[in-house]
Image 1: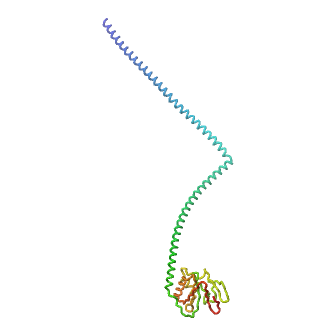
Image 2 (image 1 turned 90 degrees about the vertical axis):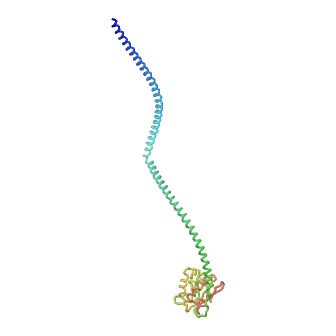
Image 3 (image 1 turned 180 degrees about the horizontal axis):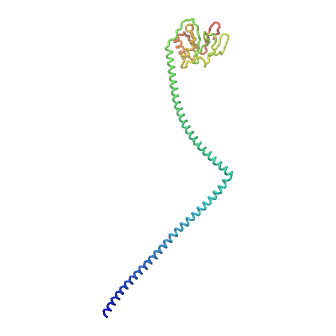
Length: 304
């Protein structure tokens, strides 16, 4: 009896312990579940609050974007309407003509601008060329002035040398002769023949190629040499010109009478030296201002 009771008490104790453990376990599970639920509700509440705040900001942004899109849509619709009206106007022939003329004028204006640009470039090149030519001209003028100065000095030296040479040259030998006298005149720095020559002999006629008669009387003819005629004694080829002119004279039968005017004393040395080199007899006559020189010539000639 006692043995059975003892087994019964042990089982009860075991069951009691098991029940207590199960109850504690249940209690713990309930506590955990309640705690998890409370924590979840709080987290959900916080998430809802946060979601509500974010949604409000996004909503505002979306509304703003929507307003912008509406405004842009209205602008596009207005542009489309304006484009349609403009396209409708383009169908008008008058507007089309004005449009074509505008395009043509625009093209002409563009071409004019390009031409003006090219003309401006050409003008700049011309200005540079003018400047270059002006500099070259100034340089040439400077060189010309230097050459003129050199020529002036050379002319003065030549004049001095001519005077010195004329002083050193012996006077012409005056000897009696029955040769025919051929008269020449030195005036204006030129040499003139009084009479004409027909290629064979001297004529008793005034050489009107070199002289002009200014007064004629029964006994004489007053003449004046032409300033542009005769032989220029200052020319570079004066010796050749004198040689050709005196080739018609016969040095064996003729004597050269040289009448020297007051403005041609310096040129006399040129003619004198040439005649001496060629072997002519010469007779100089000074033609002072206010005096007349007469050429008696032959029996049928008039005096000059």
